[in-house]
Image (cartoon, helix red, strand yellow):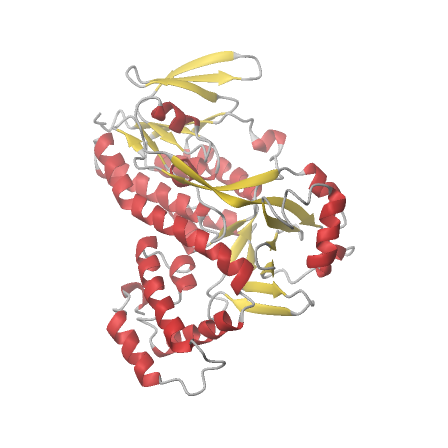
Length: 457
């Protein structure tokens, strides 16, 4: 269907992070925007926690927020993280910086606080928000979306021009689209799950640990992480296998969890006074990657964010990728009057990049839980930093490309694979960089890595 200046309207399913950001972008562009959310307004009833995994905001996400004039409001709640603070089993600490200095950092932000900020901005931009409206079914031929209010059972048939599914990994809109066409949906569950705990402020109201870092307790096949919040707490997330020892099959009760922490994370025990209660109260979260062959249904409906490409959280890019989706879709919708063309162009641009970050997120889990305290990995990191100094326009570290730049994820992935092979080749069998043949390394860099335009000052 084509749109004119008078018929530019869009109906967004889901008032989470991506839905609220897209609503702001489109409303500011002059579109009529309606957002439907199955839950109540979190600004009224509070945000439901226990399942969030704190969010890492990077340059990709901040760029999208700047496009919506939301960056300042969001950054007031953010806490800077300079790098990974690695907690060894014997209590030793090591900060592994993400970048070269405090210009290359990421930011921790609480999902609920961010969501509320974005909802306020969406409303201010002119979007209409409809809470307690669950998508029940869609009449695609008649372009009628049927919503239900589960509080009283009332039904709300609503005409639409185009539907956007920003309603997460369990997307109701995706379910409705699948009843019309095979989208090639497949979900691959990780054989690990997670549980959230909390470190409260100290007695004097300060942080209990170094606040400007992502804390990580790597233990081989499992790990614990902690991200700071602006209210001086840390959100702690334990990732365990589903089977084996230890696993969620063997660690069932709060008492079991305390025993595990005493053995494997002893320095965290004094920091989590309600460990047993948190364990019993908070749900166990599943980890999965969602793949689709198609993200849109002609010009009628399109999916973005987790609804199209849910990923595991180990690269901190799920939200950032979804925010990039919003900017891309908004740009394509404004560039053409054909909804079908806009949706197709959006999918063509974003699908290869979503697949790339999905794969990199899975790879990063192994790095975080098993390699950050490995001597070979640390030597490769040392060489990586040296080559970044020697060839700043060619050798750009993996993390820099993903978190501090906005080059396509697929480009970052390809260059990262080339660079990783180079690092392994020139460090294998070595205990240090003494005696490295720098001429050979430099020749490799020039032969394998063309200049990266975004790295040119």
